[in-house]
Amino acid sequence: MNTTLPSRRRTHQVEIEHITVGSGSPVVVQSMTNTDTADAEATALQVKELSEAGSEMVRITVNNPQAAAKVAEIRSRLDDMGCPTPLIGDFHFNGERLLAEFPECGKALAKYRINPGNVGKGTKGDEKFAFLIRTAAENGKAVRIGVNWGSLDQSLAKRLMDANRSRPEPQPPEAVMKEVLVLSALESAQKAVDLGLPENKIILSCKVSAVQDLIQVYRDLGSRCAYPLHLGLTEAGMGSKGIVASTAALSVLLQEGIGDTIRISLTPEPGSSRTQEVIVAQEILQTMGLRSFTPMVTACPGCGRTTSTVFQELARDIQLHLRMQMPVWKHKYPGVESLNVAVMGCVVNGPGESKLADIGISLPGTGETPVAPVYVDGERKVTLKGDKMAAEFLQIVETYVAENYGEGGKKRLSQAAKIIPIRQA
Ligand code: SF4
Image (cartoon, rainbow, N blue to C red; front, top):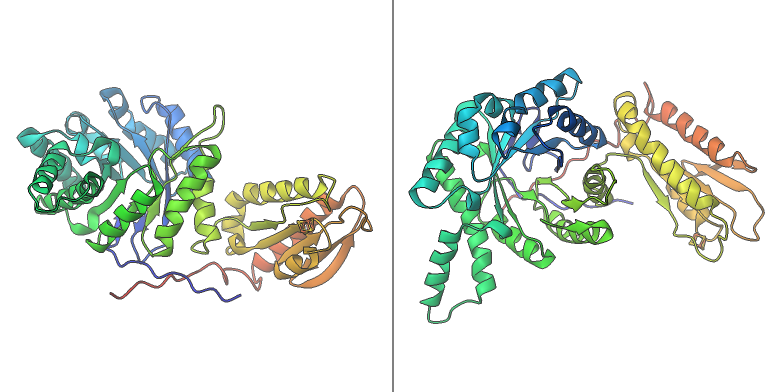
């Protein structure tokens, strides 16, 4: 099927070490640690874990002297582990003090996240903001000016609310507050430029926790500047609620070409891995056809025709197997991330979907002959049966990958590069 991809909003290109954020580059996936940054070993290990899951930049909190003192060590631990993922420092309230006291911290970070609502008020706040920006400029670092609904710039809010009250027809307070969010980001960016930070070192975000608000705010922000935008629904929540809310909001914006880097702010279930937010971010981009990260498994939901769990287990095992191979495969088999595997539960849609995939298996439904035809590039190649069906199917996938994405393979790299057009206007 020939799919037309949405065109991207045109932005500056911001270099963050080896990663480029902006409309000329793929939408970048990022995540954030939840370890105590003062624990350099635990933080470095979690950054590595997030990076291996596919996070292209990782944010760490830099909230006190103990944390700031360890940032350079975290960087060097990562370098020693062969993990070049850029680190972003999340500063609130005391960033200027920490950067002044621990200059190595500012050098080790690739980007600083500054929240204008938490820098401080009046002249003091302006001085602190200026110090943060000048330090970034001196160190050649990028900055994300990250405005957040929960920590709005109160003086700007008061200014706009007062101006609104004196209008003949005042706007509803929610509309004014959205304008506060957007204006806080734009005015802070202008201040940063006036202080000497180049425009191509600035990324903006305006995070809120309600889907419709986020869409409105980013549409507005995107139409008023050419800075790359970091998208994310703040405090998205836990489990399916967090995933669905983030997906709903980000999909609309990405479909309109808005958004150059994304983070899914999921609250992890107790004991579950932090990497889930990375997987969700990748899956949003991949299912929208904007990027490819891991071979996709198309699986039917199952119904009364599938009374056994065989096909559910096979779909799960294949997805898991493919994801686990990716750290090696992405180097060994360029383009394999575009592989499409179908695992179907019965003869109703099984052969059809299987033929559309690169490799597909149509398992027997209840009452069907207990055999599973396997389709490769649209052609029925072999029919599996018996207890070893799953292992044999995985072997077919492995062979297909090696033959098609290995040296000289006809699919090597061919499907990987997707050029997303940039809007002209
Ligand atoms: S392919 Fe078969 S098993 Fe799967 S949902 Fe459709 S009818 Fe049910």
